[in-house]
Length: 333
Length: 187
Image 1 (cartoon, helix red, strand yellow):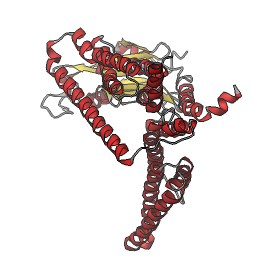
Image 2: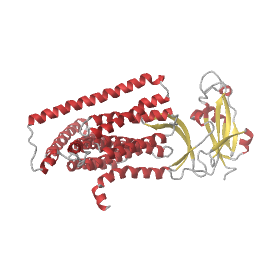
Image 3: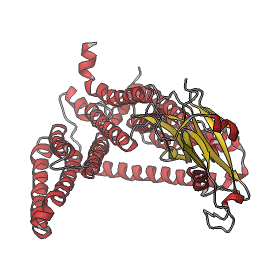
Image 4: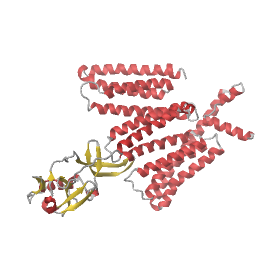
């Protein structure tokens, strides 16, 4: 490996997060002494570049969608597949080439982003143009399974968080579609099924976030924690609300269980040092306390006193959440 | 191997959870469907002068019933107009009788004489505990919806099987009438 290849490889590893500048400096016994002004200038340069890249990508996508809708009725099947799936595959290929040639830069991921947004829609267009019967969900599920495999393979080659993101997104769609295809003619209650499935997906996201926290996917930890905790707790809360209509005397098990979920979420937020999980858990705890108050105490205590108690509970929970964040999450990070 | 599992435990769990749920759901969904030993007889409207046989169910329910284990034809008021469109039902609707073979899941039209020769049970539930249900079911999942369909099922306990009735795509609650379970030719 010559000097240029070595530097390019190092730059790529730093950009993807596999290794940090401090670790390299530690290797040689010194830390980089950069003036804060230069670093700030460098960071703002990156921010402006990033913004321009993202803006450009968004405008390209809007332009593609507008262009395709304009010419839709004037082109045949091949034309429609070309401008959707074809363009998606081409931009993905360009992104892969750029990732290899310019590993530390954002230009490759931007093309991958455009491709990732076009490929699923393009695949649906392809299925439609091939006269696939949409009364069965199996073709769509299998298509998303293929897209998932595609991104997993691509990710294995490039090891980039954006490709991991598309793998997770397409994988999630695949799981939902597969469950729908399997249960189409069964008598399983749909509402419960999708609530439990969303809880499982939320749990998976949290596990992924924990697993990614120390590798090149660490940039996805925040969003996985946010979406995962929200998915889990919102689905569980939907079971609480559903149970309220069938409640007999006394508390329903879901109403008790949900307290364990939210306090578990708060504990997990400390363990994973995630402000997102803490915030979502606190919000759902507030929602649950409000629900319990309205179900069990509003009629006996009256709404005015219930509201006063609820208000103090909100203040207490908010204060507690901020304290946990300061002391255990940001404090020990 | 042990080292691999220890190092990647959370990653393995992240995949294991949805896979486990899919396996569970598959086992439940593909467990033996609802079956019955008994065929059943039903009536269905085609249009007379009405292109869409709306409110036909009421008319069919009045004509056909089961009395003393036999199909009974009841007189209908010739002026009866269920949909209040000024045209009597007797002119609007043309009823047909079908027998559904539940083993092969297929229907065939039968004559009134053949229907009258059968021994029927007028209960909604068959002697082996099966009933017929129907309803609108979305085709697809958000955002991949492809309309909805009105389907009929036999259900028993938590199991169900979709019925393949005559002219399934044009069969609705309004132009379908269950008459009775066939007792005389049980398998």
